[in-house]
Length: 435
Ligand code: PMP
Image (cartoon, rainbow, N blue to C red; front, side):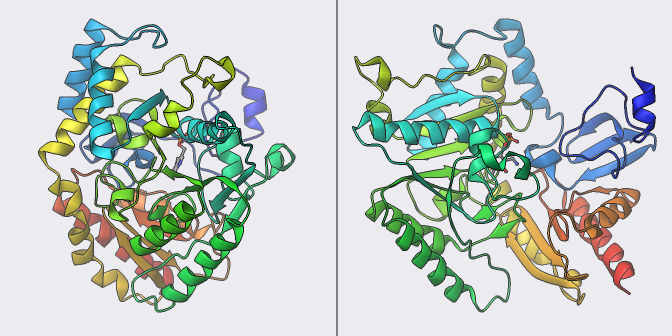
């Protein structure tokens, strides 16, 4: 333990931990959690009970420590905890593959262990697929404001900003199309969509290996939502120009946008889909890249160069698969939990809507977001978010604004009272801040 070096930073931080996405010099130290139950997180120092307003980085789906999923993991752990997946198969992986294939209509599943890897795999498959078919295509298209993860390939696909500028020279080029975000009362949405589609048509004049998108909702980029009809039209253009389409459903999958997967809401058929986060109900790290059979087929060959030479130690970990199967059981037992969630948000927005600094309110499935107009400095580094977060914690709500974008993305099990309390807390804080 090197206390000396730590004293130069912030002595309240643990001396051996390097936290994710955090500048410890300007951030409050981590708070120790003793346990979690359903939508609640229990902390010590300070001792608090917090509503988890963002599902612990968008992963916790049915609530913390869900008994049914915990039981499934525990049972599996006593049967088989891990196995090398290149040589062996196990019942949980078989079952999960069959179920996910059935509900998505994409036949082949490639397992990894986080969202970035699932995206990375999709990109590599798409890029190699063209070569397996005797063509080299270098153009990749993504959307402005996108976030696809932090490994190099996934990072290159995302918006270039302060988070990745140190690596600029190491990233491959990606072409970008604007993302026509919309909100309640937006009357320019059609113009924005037309412009974006024109950009897409223009770029697709060059042969393109793949277009990647977060269907309906860009998460980390600022909870920016587009209309399903835009996604559908973009899809038609992509298909008619013979490019592959990758849907990054790492966040949007498993009911978050009101349908089991967001691509279904837009009525499109991606060639590849990346999923993670809610996949195991948020219990264990797992990523999956789903692929159409026709893509997979080009990798089946006597020629070793056509093989997809990629794999991870924990591929299809049995505990993760057991958790994912249990989570799917819960989703299947009660699809109304996600398909009807939107109504709860609509019933609660009125008070916030009355505040003049609350702008661009949007709702999609389980997600509610808005922009706080405080000064001209919008974006992730806007400090208002940190202040709102800190006040909310004191009142019993955990949120993690993206700069001046405030949002709720709660677990499906949040009670009506807890959701109403979350809205009331936001209202009280914002009213006081801006009065
Ligand atoms: N894609 C999207 C849309 C995401 O929201 C995220 C994570 N926020 C990722 C990819 C990366 O996932 P992970 O953090 O599990 O690597």
